[in-house]
Amino acid sequence: MNMKITKIASMALLTAGIASAGTEQVKSAFEQMMDEGKVNINARLRYEGLEVRSGSNLDALTLRTRVGFTTGEYNGFKAMIEMEDVSSLSQETHHPADPLVTELNQFWGSYTAENYDVKFGRQVYALDNHRFIGHVGWRQNIQTFDAITSNTSFIPGVDLKLAFLEGQNNVLGKTSSLEGYIVNATSKINDNLTLQGFGYSLQFDGNPAAKSTDTLGFTAKGKFSLADQAFGYVASVATQTDNSSSPSGRDLDNSYYDLQLNTKIAGFTFGLGYEVLGGNGATGFTTPLATLHKFNGFADQFLGASASGGLTSGLVDQSASVGYKLPIGNGLSLKAIYHQFETEAGEELGTEIDFVAVYPISKSIKFLTKYGNYSGDDSTIAYGNGDRKMISAELNFVY
Image (cartoon, rainbow, N blue to C red; front, side):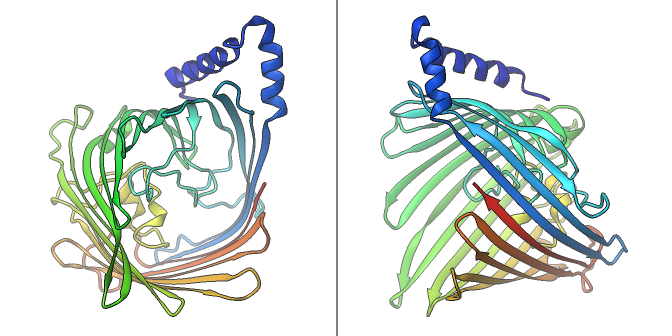
């Protein structure tokens, strides 16, 4: 377990919170925090099937269970502890990215004031659309960070998020030591425009050093009307360079672009996407802390390269989607997505068709199924292991 500074700080924070009441009130403060606390239970039963042209097929049935307790608040202080277990129900068969583990998932203390809050310790942490910092909630073993995180509103009209990441506890059950400095500032200009600037410096120790990068970016999102039709959009641009922890002699200078457009017509939601992860022939734009499954297709064809050294020839993902919510019971949400992949030079990298359906059975129980079919038959540059198909079905219980 790699908690070092964050573990010590979280314990100090909680001790200070209770001690602030005075010695004679410590017992009543502790009792109040326990009495007002809440238990959380999150269980997910999932079947996942994978078919790869290279022959690495898989059928897995796993159960993920998380049980935690969050105290009540006292003088702005509270704490949380959570355990997580991933078990196989199919003769120990499991997806390679879903190790069978039992672990301390979260353990943090927090303090909330009028204009800021701060949280110390092992925690789930994600920013924006998870493209750069995510919790990888799709996998059974969620990603957490040993970190100090804060949200502030000291600057009028600016939501400022700051964080120091000391350890990445990834979905594979492995911890990577790093120094991650996170700055993310958002300002709502008006009802139609929100601007954001961000800077992420990730300095990994040991073998993951190839993931060390400095990333600076800018995002604009909002809405507009054209011929009386309302549209929503998100546009992002970023650049990525080496830092002092990067491998000696590496020349990393790549760019990222993303444009998403959506509109709603007669109950249908239509979307178009154009995302570019740059590559210079030797290195590629990489996002090792992201929720990668959310991007570039459910079949995860490009996931490995995106998380490590990047896609050296770059990746252009042109996508189109359509979604509709059927008025059946509590509402059945359906969505289909088509991807066409290319290198930055225009060489074909294949296509993919994805489907997802979500049905809330009750307030606490939700059913979800996904299908992804990647075809690389026309590809001249190979990433991964050729054609891939995935299918999953799961029940989620949240209390």
